[in-house]
Amino acid sequence: MTISSIEGMLQQLRGLAQAAGGSTAPQTPSPATESFAGELQRSLQRLNVSQERAYGQAEAFEMGKPGVSLNDVMIDMQKANISFQTAVQVRNRLAAAYQEMMNMPV
Image 1 (tube, rainbow, N blue to C red):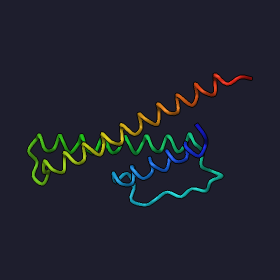
Image 2: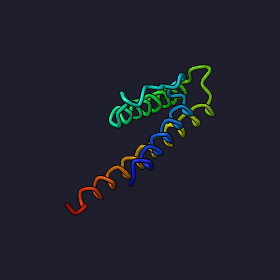
Image 3: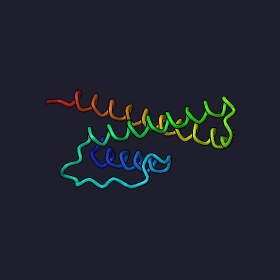
């Protein structure tokens, strides 16, 4: 796994987070101050916000609150699920890359 493929996965995570409504204004920190760990942390925070919003809407629908439709609840739940599955795949690829690096001959 190369740095360019990891950066590609980060771009996909950013796109999914923005599509899920994770942030309304794109964050553009300078490359010198942005770190991989920081970007990973922000992606996980956006994932958490997306899941909390989806579960909050589902709970509101279950309680019968007006203005919450089943269509919106199902769409938000699917967006949160897709974001979570993407995060799991990124984790799996990072773990595989780590294992590959650890098995490299010295």
